Length: 350
Image 1 (tube, helix red, strand yellow):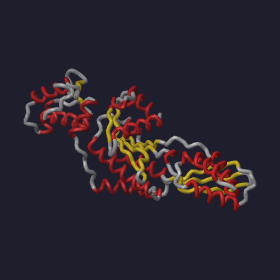
Image 2 (cartoon, rainbow, N blue to C red):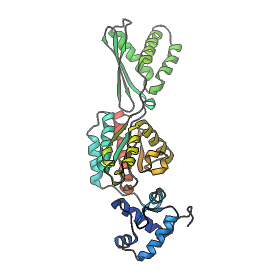
Image 3 (cartoon, rainbow, N blue to C red):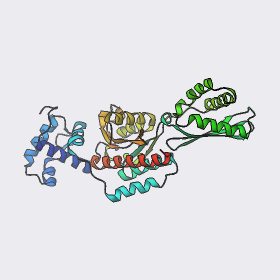
Image 4 (cartoon, one colour):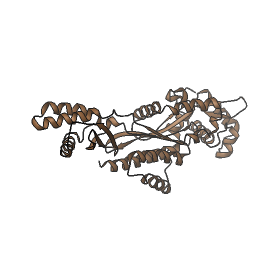
């Protein structure tokens, strides 16, 4: 059997059976188990021969000479791409996801944290939500107010529904009226501007305006230059302990390798973004060695982008052993991404 040849009907039937059995039991799958469990018309000997062909082509492997077989990354990939079908969520499951997410609708960060907890709870795996990158957010509102004779508070609300605050040293003698004018000027010129472009935009305004507005523009520029730099978008991750309860990670070296990757959240977030970008719309799956990260060789990820308005904002996903119920988790991630998009869009007022 050539590795580039599509499997025939019998081979697909047996590969599907092996994958589904192994996902359920975490035990190598033998030919007699397949015949009995799926009521096949083939003899165990025929199934063994087909399994041997699938092993030769790289879809299955035999861990020990006398044991049954388990799927390889290539076998899981074929199953996900051609055999599994996406399992529809029940009305009760959909209602549960919506109910859990609705309980934190006043704060975007809480919505995302709640979503990662929800994914972990529903999947019994590790839930992940990569927050929107602050550089891609747009200014919705800015407020500047005095907090002492030498300090000012700045509040910036962005298009993702988040509010950022900072206390700045400010001792130019501005009175309450000047702060009102400054806030009005900033809102007039910064609303809708990308958060990472505020300083550049204000530099251009300073060069254009004259008289009283020039003074306001220069003060506004000073305010923006004093704001702290944007932080990397956080990755909310919940349920990691559930991952290490799986049989695959009873081996301490495997568990340590995976734990090391989970600790590097910026790296994991970058992997999420890169793999979802390659896959395009909807939920995507990457399996084990496909990530090309040594620490993730025993891991699979089901991930999907979410949006605020019409703009792609971030990524959510479920991380677990390669032996995951992909049919169900693909539906869970897809639906949760849709709900998160809806809630964040509503929160941002887009």
